[in-house]
Image (tube, rainbow, N blue to C red; front, side):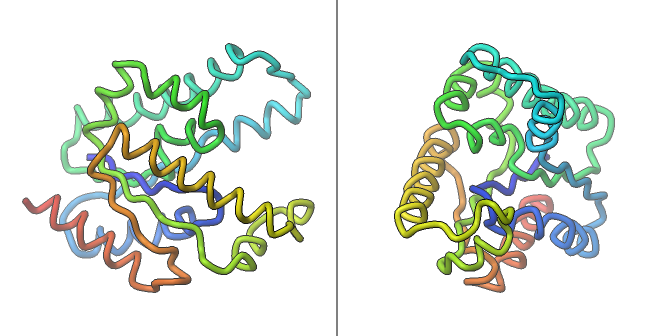
Length: 196
Protein backbone atom coordinates (compact mmCIF):
# COMPACT_ATOMS: atom_id res chain seq x y z
CA UNK A 1 0.00 0.00 0.00
CA UNK A 2 1.13 3.58 -0.65
CA UNK A 3 1.13 6.21 2.08
CA UNK A 4 1.37 9.81 0.94
CA UNK A 5 2.85 12.73 2.86
CA UNK A 6 1.37 15.82 1.28
CA UNK A 7 1.02 19.56 1.79
CA UNK A 8 2.63 22.72 0.44
CA UNK A 9 6.32 23.61 0.38
CA UNK A 10 8.38 23.66 3.60
CA UNK A 11 5.92 21.60 5.63
CA UNK A 12 8.54 19.04 6.68
CA UNK A 13 7.30 16.12 4.55
CA UNK A 14 10.51 15.60 2.54
CA UNK A 15 12.74 15.85 5.64
CA UNK A 16 10.48 13.38 7.44
CA UNK A 17 10.23 10.83 4.62
CA UNK A 18 13.36 8.69 5.21
CA UNK A 19 13.39 8.78 9.06
CA UNK A 20 9.71 7.83 8.98
CA UNK A 21 10.52 4.91 6.68
CA UNK A 22 13.31 3.73 9.00
CA UNK A 23 11.03 4.00 12.03
CA UNK A 24 8.31 1.88 10.39
CA UNK A 25 10.74 -0.71 9.00
CA UNK A 26 12.26 -1.24 12.46
CA UNK A 27 8.86 -2.03 13.93
CA UNK A 28 7.23 -4.16 11.22
CA UNK A 29 8.46 -7.03 9.05
CA UNK A 30 8.05 -5.22 5.73
CA UNK A 31 10.35 -3.34 3.41
CA UNK A 32 9.70 0.43 3.19
CA UNK A 33 10.40 2.14 -0.15
CA UNK A 34 10.44 5.95 -0.33
CA UNK A 35 9.42 7.68 -3.55
CA UNK A 36 10.42 11.32 -3.66
CA UNK A 37 8.95 14.28 -5.57
CA UNK A 38 9.22 14.05 -9.34
CA UNK A 39 7.85 17.37 -10.51
CA UNK A 40 10.58 19.73 -9.17
CA UNK A 41 13.18 17.66 -11.05
CA UNK A 42 11.11 17.82 -14.24
CA UNK A 43 10.53 21.57 -13.90
CA UNK A 44 14.27 22.20 -13.27
CA UNK A 45 15.08 20.26 -16.45
CA UNK A 46 12.53 22.24 -18.45
CA UNK A 47 13.97 25.50 -17.12
CA UNK A 48 17.56 24.41 -17.85
CA UNK A 49 16.78 23.78 -21.52
CA UNK A 50 14.58 26.91 -21.71
CA UNK A 51 11.54 24.94 -22.83
CA UNK A 52 8.45 27.12 -22.59
CA UNK A 53 5.16 25.33 -21.94
CA UNK A 54 2.82 28.26 -22.49
CA UNK A 55 -0.53 26.61 -23.04
CA UNK A 56 -2.68 24.91 -20.44
CA UNK A 57 -2.74 21.73 -22.54
CA UNK A 58 1.09 21.56 -22.66
CA UNK A 59 1.49 22.06 -18.94
CA UNK A 60 -1.29 19.60 -18.14
CA UNK A 61 0.27 16.93 -20.35
CA UNK A 62 3.64 17.04 -18.57
CA UNK A 63 2.09 17.06 -15.07
CA UNK A 64 -0.16 14.19 -16.07
CA UNK A 65 2.76 12.16 -17.47
CA UNK A 66 4.73 12.58 -14.23
CA UNK A 67 1.73 11.54 -12.12
CA UNK A 68 1.14 8.45 -14.26
CA UNK A 69 4.81 7.35 -14.15
CA UNK A 70 4.84 7.47 -10.37
CA UNK A 71 1.56 5.58 -10.06
CA UNK A 72 2.73 2.93 -12.54
CA UNK A 73 5.86 2.28 -10.44
CA UNK A 74 3.70 1.66 -7.37
CA UNK A 75 1.07 -0.43 -9.14
CA UNK A 76 3.54 -2.73 -10.91
CA UNK A 77 5.70 -3.42 -7.88
CA UNK A 78 2.64 -3.97 -5.67
CA UNK A 79 1.52 -6.71 -8.05
CA UNK A 80 4.80 -8.58 -7.65
CA UNK A 81 5.53 -7.98 -3.95
CA UNK A 82 2.83 -7.42 -1.34
CA UNK A 83 5.41 -7.12 1.43
CA UNK A 84 6.38 -3.54 0.56
CA UNK A 85 5.19 -0.26 2.07
CA UNK A 86 5.50 2.83 -0.14
CA UNK A 87 6.08 6.25 1.37
CA UNK A 88 5.59 9.01 -1.20
CA UNK A 89 6.46 12.68 -1.16
CA UNK A 90 3.08 14.04 -2.33
CA UNK A 91 2.49 11.16 -4.75
CA UNK A 92 0.03 11.88 -7.52
CA UNK A 93 -0.98 15.05 -5.68
CA UNK A 94 2.32 16.63 -6.73
CA UNK A 95 0.26 17.81 -9.68
CA UNK A 96 -2.20 19.66 -7.47
CA UNK A 97 0.43 21.33 -5.30
CA UNK A 98 2.03 23.04 -8.28
CA UNK A 99 -1.19 24.08 -9.98
CA UNK A 100 -4.56 23.82 -8.23
CA UNK A 101 -6.54 24.33 -11.46
CA UNK A 102 -4.57 21.91 -13.61
CA UNK A 103 -4.31 19.44 -10.77
CA UNK A 104 -8.06 19.39 -10.25
CA UNK A 105 -8.65 18.70 -13.94
CA UNK A 106 -6.35 15.70 -13.71
CA UNK A 107 -7.97 14.49 -10.47
CA UNK A 108 -11.35 14.64 -12.23
CA UNK A 109 -10.25 11.85 -14.58
CA UNK A 110 -11.91 8.60 -13.51
CA UNK A 111 -8.86 6.36 -13.88
CA UNK A 112 -6.80 8.67 -11.65
CA UNK A 113 -9.55 8.66 -9.02
CA UNK A 114 -9.65 4.86 -9.13
CA UNK A 115 -5.93 4.74 -8.36
CA UNK A 116 -5.76 7.30 -5.54
CA UNK A 117 -8.56 5.77 -3.48
CA UNK A 118 -6.28 2.84 -2.66
CA UNK A 119 -3.65 5.13 -1.14
CA UNK A 120 -3.59 6.67 2.34
CA UNK A 121 -3.00 10.42 2.66
CA UNK A 122 -1.44 12.46 5.48
CA UNK A 123 -1.64 16.25 5.16
CA UNK A 124 1.11 18.07 7.06
CA UNK A 125 0.39 21.72 7.78
CA UNK A 126 2.76 24.62 7.27
CA UNK A 127 4.65 25.70 10.40
CA UNK A 128 2.99 28.49 12.35
CA UNK A 129 6.24 30.51 12.33
CA UNK A 130 6.91 32.05 8.88
CA UNK A 131 10.65 32.19 9.64
CA UNK A 132 10.79 28.39 9.50
CA UNK A 133 9.32 28.46 5.97
CA UNK A 134 11.79 31.16 4.92
CA UNK A 135 14.76 29.06 6.05
CA UNK A 136 14.00 26.30 3.56
CA UNK A 137 13.16 28.63 0.66
CA UNK A 138 15.61 29.64 -2.02
CA UNK A 139 17.38 32.90 -1.18
CA UNK A 140 15.57 34.89 -3.88
CA UNK A 141 12.22 33.83 -2.42
CA UNK A 142 12.94 35.03 1.13
CA UNK A 143 11.94 38.23 2.94
CA UNK A 144 8.33 37.94 1.89
CA UNK A 145 5.63 40.39 2.90
CA UNK A 146 2.82 39.69 5.37
CA UNK A 147 0.42 39.48 2.41
CA UNK A 148 2.48 36.69 0.88
CA UNK A 149 2.22 34.54 3.98
CA UNK A 150 -1.54 35.11 4.17
CA UNK A 151 -1.91 34.04 0.53
CA UNK A 152 0.26 30.99 1.09
CA UNK A 153 -1.92 29.84 4.00
CA UNK A 154 -5.07 30.43 1.95
CA UNK A 155 -3.55 28.30 -0.81
CA UNK A 156 -2.77 25.61 1.75
CA UNK A 157 -6.43 25.55 2.81
CA UNK A 158 -7.59 25.30 -0.83
CA UNK A 159 -5.12 22.48 -1.44
CA UNK A 160 -6.33 20.59 1.63
CA UNK A 161 -10.00 21.06 0.68
CA UNK A 162 -9.30 19.80 -2.83
CA UNK A 163 -7.65 16.63 -1.51
CA UNK A 164 -10.55 16.03 0.89
CA UNK A 165 -12.97 16.32 -2.01
CA UNK A 166 -11.39 13.23 -3.57
CA UNK A 167 -10.12 11.60 -0.40
CA UNK A 168 -12.49 12.30 2.55
CA UNK A 169 -10.39 10.12 4.90
CA UNK A 170 -7.52 12.63 4.79
CA UNK A 171 -5.69 12.90 8.12
CA UNK A 172 -4.15 16.27 9.07
CA UNK A 173 -1.06 16.76 11.24
CA UNK A 174 0.87 19.75 12.55
CA UNK A 175 4.29 20.67 11.17
CA UNK A 176 7.01 18.75 13.10
CA UNK A 177 8.35 22.06 14.46
CA UNK A 178 4.94 22.69 16.06
CA UNK A 179 4.45 19.09 17.15
CA UNK A 180 7.64 16.97 17.41
CA UNK A 181 5.48 13.87 17.82
CA UNK A 182 4.01 14.22 14.30
CA UNK A 183 6.31 11.59 12.74
CA UNK A 184 5.60 9.06 15.50
CA UNK A 185 1.85 9.62 15.21
CA UNK A 186 1.95 8.97 11.46
CA UNK A 187 4.16 5.89 11.92
CA UNK A 188 1.71 4.53 14.48
CA UNK A 189 -1.27 4.79 12.12
CA UNK A 190 0.67 3.15 9.24
CA UNK A 191 1.87 0.25 11.42
CA UNK A 192 -1.63 -0.27 12.81
CA UNK A 193 -3.06 -0.29 9.29
CA UNK A 194 -0.47 -2.76 8.02
CA UNK A 195 -1.10 -5.14 10.92
CA UNK A 196 -4.87 -5.09 10.56
